[in-house]
Image (cartoon, helix red, strand yellow):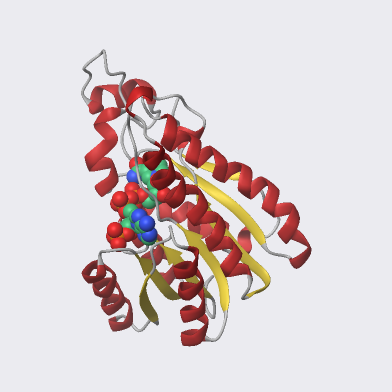
Length: 255
Ligand SMILES: NC(=O)c1ccc[n+]([C@@H]2O[C@H](COP(=O)([O-])OP(=O)(O)OC[C@H]3O[C@@H](n4cnc5c(N)ncnc54)[C@H](OP(=O)(O)O)[C@@H]3O)[C@@H](O)[C@H]2O)c1
């Protein structure tokens, strides 16, 4: 495989499972050194580290709840303490939410925006303290930021804010030759999708997910995490040197 990330140190938040774990493995296969952030799944994160180091790579796992900016600062500092520098931030940590307007509480708002939006903003703030010229930042939005889904308001809004963040931070970071973009994944076969994908069809139709996908997704299926990881790898690489402030939809043609 191409060695686009040889000598690059990469922090991946939410790197223990799902899309983040697939990104971690993809970038490691291309030569990256990894600091894997996780919240609660220490065994999954440590198992990933063991597999990467057994394959000749370098990796550490660091517990960091992204809702707490101080823990994000610790994650970036640990990466630099272990490996000397920081070149790429991939921010994958996120949580789903479905609920009607009347069910929503201020605590739901604070939790969903705290992880999906605030967590990504302060990850960027702490990462760029260490980044050199040529740094790459890839955040995570969702197709839901731009497509209406019943009872998905809070999650969708938390992700739409991320697209506005990359648009505006690109201008600020450009003078340092740091690029910042987002991936907006479509439905991807992870723990999150296993729990929540069934909520995407209109609630009155009672459609099974597979039937809904045949009429709303050109490729008629969920993505595999590895397919989404390839899009992150592109934006995190030198191949994307003139691409900043943008959100790339990796959604199988969601219509
Ligand atoms: N799967 C989809 O269909 C889909 C579609 C569009 C967008 N996305 C977005 O893609 C990203 C990854 O989703 P996924 O499907 O891979 O989810 P997942 O399988 O549920 O994994 C979530 C990851 O985020 C981490 N995480 C959650 N809350 C955290 C917190 N407060 N602090 C630190 N880490 C935290 C988890 O860590 P632990 O393992 O330690 O709990 C885990 O590594 C999310 O931002 C999600 O919104 C997913």
